Length: 460
Picture 1 (cartoon, helix red, strand yellow):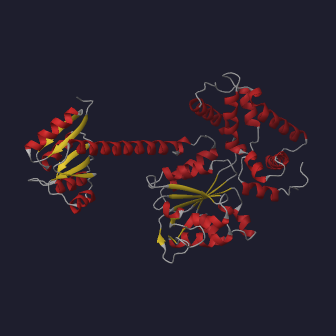
Picture 2 (cartoon, helix red, strand yellow):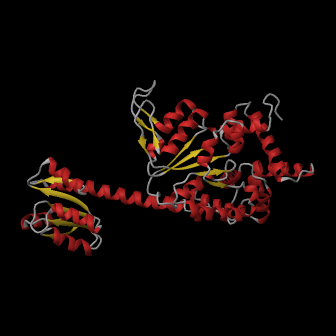
Picture 3 (tube, rainbow, N blue to C red):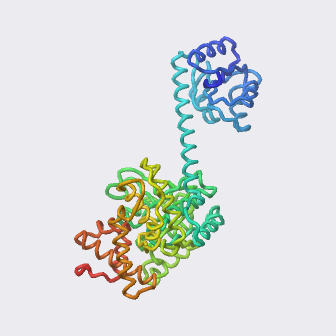
């Protein structure tokens, strides 16, 4: 009997109690009986019962008082109310007090069974959502950010200190360093973790659509606005919003963004009435925003509004100690995901990975590990499995060293410039395809082409 689904019937009519008990036991339920709300509360204190069928009109404690008592004592059970004196108003009143559904007496057996099935499906979805949320929270716990270097340990400490504050966070670092992972760690370690975490890439959305994406619009406010639409600020209310590639937001929208941050309210396109929002902002960029301010392409007042709690995520080449841990993590991850059984890397292969400069950072490392595991000839990876990536990169590093260049920063700039030139050459100058090949965003590619003064008509 312990494996059966438990159900509580609460009704002052003895005949109704026994009728429902007989009906529901035939359907495999373990049925408990109570003659009023007070007796039902006593049962629920001692038994974990997911579903309760409760009459509304009863002596001592009626159905309405029973629902209030459940809420006051924080007792969880899905309640379906019943009454022979049913009205729409009564049904609405019970649902306001926490009931899931309402059934009018007299009812057919199939009617009550169907209502119970719907309630159970709802409970299963709730349980599934709770479990999924727990998995997400565990996945983005800062304990699962892989690394032991002083730089990453310092970031752990910062996350612990700042997670529960509403102040804006500015994440800086090269593409592929894990800015989105850090932003999720901040959210899921905060008191906002049960509220939405949303992200928008400010560099990936055309300027003509970005304003509507951020702030929403009113029906008819522009061509194509066929319905009212919430902006992402409204969607993220009470939660966290990641504004990725914030350095690429157009200057005219920077003013509107600043207003939202200052006033705590957003205004849809075409509407005069603002909507209050409570959103924790995390901004991320691979750009040097101070330089952008100097170039008058980013507003100084917005920069200071965003840069309240800055976190710089160093590139992988500056935290070599983390590479062995990351490699181990990715091998375990893709063994499980792809049902593989790849062994840990040999020291000679790991040494090549540690010596590489990783212009694509963690994203590049993960990409190489996954691809090599899938294409591996056996269960032990060697350099031949990585010949299209690591070997050529190793040769590039050797050539640079023989040129007498030992500065990491200069070496990285030379490698980046060469890789961008090669990607442009391979794609025939198609910047979108080149960005995908390089595994960086399109705006980042444009920025680097300008920074390195790459002549697109004369590629290396």
